[in-house]
Length: 317
Image (cartoon, rainbow, N blue to C red):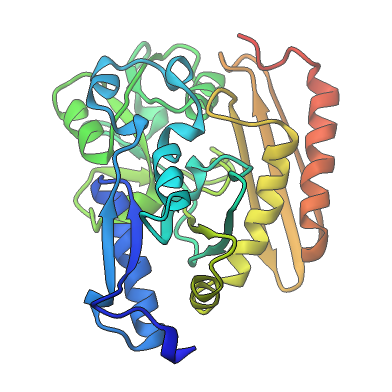
């Protein structure tokens, strides 16, 4: 396919959000494609697209995501640009992605997964146990809020929206004593100076697909599909297939506190899942093991078991 590779005159257009983390992920994608096909960087064009979730008025208002929309907040405009031909591929943080894509688009390429753990971030305290009673913790994640309150119901949780830099600034300004970020984001941004401690997955199960970058394309774009296949990381895809099947069966969105993690050991896959009441007063968890090929079925079966235990109105506050 060398005759049909992108050139500086006809670059492959990479769509992304404009945050520093989103741009870092787009640059990683470009670097991997450059290396795979021995192409110069100007054979690619990074196109920044503002999404509803990037609207400063919504971020600064600190309204909960569930009052504004759902996971499509961070993808809708980017996917529209791909469908109308303005861009060729889109780079996404997979934990932001709905489980179904619009007709005509495929999400079938994943880069090697980063650290899946959450990070406890505080300039004054070393970990969750060190927080004094009644301390204020900021997070916009319903999962993290529920997990936090299930362990420390004495804490006050406030809405903490914005990109990594915005949330760190709020922390510095004293809006909260601590917050949570994804270790993957801190690592990708090279932010080694952030005062944080990684939280073991046994203590805080991460979001579905946390730490993974996904690349979306038009289903009928054969050239791009062939190029992306060269940088696809098989094991990440296998893990996400199980986790996202679990999420899909729960009808998960930004409005539901859900955690999941699939891990590989040879040809075996272990899946852990957790659902929480939004106020943290009830938690149901499960785990299963099987072959890698059984991962998606394991995810669906686990979701069914947890829903049967929890009841139909479980996610209602």
